[in-house]
Structure formats: C-alpha cells, structure tokens
Image (cartoon, rainbow over all chains, first blue to last red; front, side, top):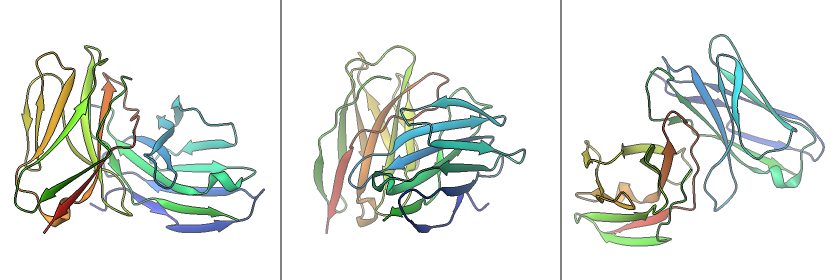
Length: 114
Length: 110
C-alpha cells in the first residue's frame, strides 16, 4: 500500500498564476481533506471532499477550489496566486465508514510563489 | 471544536518516558482527543485518540483526566526518532476536520 501520494513534491509559481495540486488517497479511503501549512505554523484546514462533493470548508477564499474524482483522488486548485500562498500543502485521506477515524497524510507539496 | 493548549517545547532524555501535556478545558462530551506528530519535512502522523478512557497502542499511551479537561500523551521509551512537533486536537464526533494549533516541539536528547 503506497499510502497517500501527492504530486508534485515541489513547485515554483509566479504571482497571479494558477496551480493544481494532486492527491491519491490511501487504498480503501473515500474522504480527502486538504490543509495549508505556513512555515512554523500548524496545518490549517482548507476543505474536505466526500462522494465528489465538498463537505466542509475552512476559512479560505474562493480562489481555493477542489475536485474529487470517482476513484476518490482529488485536486486542489488555487487561482490568482499571492505571495502569501507559499506554503506546504498537505492532503489527508480517511474512511467515512467509521464513526471516528485517523487521517493519513501525504508528504505534501511545497509551493513557492515568487 | 474545543481549543487545546500545549507547552511550546519540551526536552526528554533518550530512553526515558516523554510525557506531553494538553489542556482542553472547554471540551464537549462528543469531542475526542486526538494526538498527531509531525517529523520535520513530513506530513503529520496519527498517534492515538480517546474519548474518556485511557488508551494504549504500540506507539504511545493516552491518559485523560476524569473531568476530561486535560490529557497526557506518554511515549514510554523515547528514541531520537521521536523528535517532532506533537499536536493535541479536540475532534467533534463525526466531524473529521482537524484544527491544529502550534503543538509542542519535543526534542529527544542523546
């Protein structure tokens, strides 16, 4: 089992550009969540996808959007990039079949906006 | 989700037990206490969770006070590989959103 995989691992973009990050969940997991982690801070919840729908959303602007595919993989899109969007973006997967469950995180995508 | 409070940093000698405290005085009855850790440059890793009973697994033990206002994560025999930031999180029943604070940076000293 490869666990949660994210691509790319590193990315450099220019202000104003758009970026797409990808995540494949752990085998058997159907729920994907995305987090943003700025340097020296804990991860901040962006949103969660389940059954191809956005189920929960954190305090992030509409520039942040996502998608979940029928195979449960997910994408995070960020439009009109700002310097402040530079961060580690983490994907976590879990199973909705339990009442409470642990989340498995990927290694993250390091996004640098210049 | 209830707010949690943790000391910003702690040191522990290798081979000794590391005891990491967490205060969650406003926790509600349907919130679980979860612990994750993040080793440098990696994604967070689940350690353990509990509701009101003490829990133990192969990684750690979780002691929750009877009033549920605080808890302690215990790593019984700390190794250098346990050096990481440890996060204590109160998670609402059925809600998988994790609200991370700044955690405790645990350094294991040889």
